[in-house]
Amino acid sequence: MSKISKDEFVKNQILEGAKEVFRKYGYKNAKMEQIAKESGKGRSTLYYYYESKEAVFKAFVTDFNQPLFNSLKTKLTPTNTLEKNCLTYIQAHFENTANGIETYGAILNDLKQDIGFVAAILLQIRQQDLDVIKSFLVWAIEKEEIKPIEESNLNFLATVILNTKESVKKEYFIYETIQGDPIKRLKWITKLLINSLK
Image (cartoon, rainbow, N blue to C red):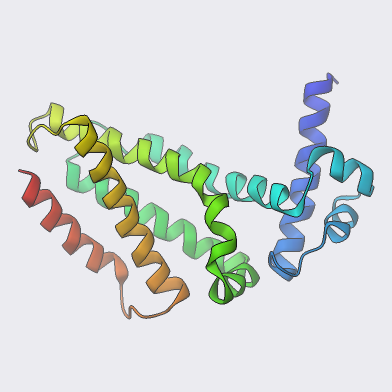
């Protein structure tokens, strides 16, 4: 086994152990000692690959969301309408979050107490999201489905779409201020947005 593949193998073992610890204890109550024990590694090995609990959690968040981004690569296409791509993107995110909460309810409890701890960690995923949104906006422009948009405005629009989706997710999952089906609300907002861009 090469050093690279060995390193990846060990990191994956640690990550699998961390998943179980985060499932049981959430982020705030999880300890590096618990992650080491659950993954069958010594503390020195754990700290060699991950310098802190935050580093482990970053890897966990990236790993958890990677299947979502992989599926979006096949679901979002230039042949879809902008509305279909936008709604597919939003729905996939909501389903991914709902599935995560079902498994990692303890992390949701952490978020309800203090959402700030995860903000910096989510920045790395944010750029992936912005790239996805910009791609289906560009497709819509190329098909003349919506009017041309300057690059700076395109970046701003992608940010607005992302922030709207994230805000509704927070209101629904964390603050519990939105009752009923949030996707219906987002469909309505999406239609308003698209109509304004035509």
